[in-house]
Amino acid sequence: MSFRNRVSLRDAMRGIIEEPLLQMVPKSFDYIGDVAIISIPPELEAYKDTIASKLLSMRGNTRAVLNKVSKLEGEHRVADFELLFGESTETIHRENGYIYKLDVKRVFFNPRLYSERGRIASKITPGEHIIIPFAGVGPFVLPAAGKGAKVYAVEINPDACACLKENIRINRLEGQVTVIQEDFRKLFQPEKVFQIFNPSKASEKPETGKNDENNENCTFDRAIVPIPYGMDLFLERILKFVRTGGYIHFYTFKAESQISELIEDYKEMGLEVEFYRRTGNVAPSISRWVFDLIKK
Image (cartoon, rainbow, N blue to C red; front, side, top):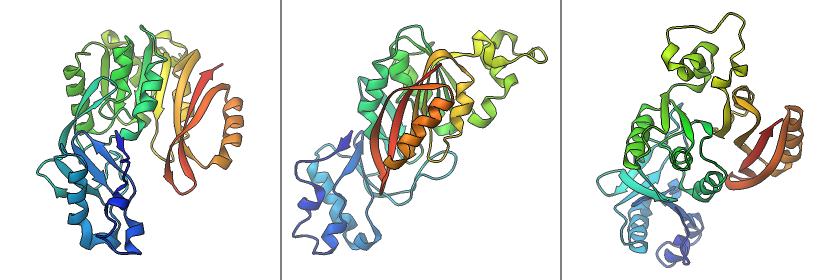
């Protein structure tokens, strides 16, 4: 989970790092399992080892300290890390009663959304059919499957898919989840959707002119869509595969001043905004927002 000590890291470094450099020390950092992750600015290059040592002293079971040196990049959504302490970036992370085995350097995982993922799981009922693109190692997938839903998890990163399959096994959720290693832009071609949801007829093709979005075998009760930055247009694609009355939990990155207009846009798309809230800040004036939408 996201780690915010009663004494911040900046306060802990007081007297070790002089002003004004002290103000550049991050106030918070994250834990994924027993791996601490921090973003140390270049101005504090000379203090990296000292900061890592301090992190180790603030939580006794820390096994590795990583310095995040780039933002998420590429279609696999992974960042570059510098290993400041430890020998391995593999870890076991526990969240909301589920176990996640992952390699922090190879896959994307945001521990700060743990309460949000618990909120979404609380809304799921047994028997639902749910699609989750950008599924990663399964932080939205496992809780949904654990509630008795049939989940289709889409992820392009082969390392994340391998982790997800292992996490499904570890949490004894085999049979509840179908893992699809695919680029979402290719997945929603009609023929591919038909094959995925009609595996016994995979060699067949949909009838000419048949609209798969109206095929009950290709519609979902719920979609959980934690899109990367800048992919809002994907909402229109996923809508085609959610039944009328179904839910879409859509995550987007916006300034607060954009929210009113965004709500109007959703209404014009035939969506009812049941709930929305900020789920974290990602840049000055830009936050991650979740919208619980109902397809009308």
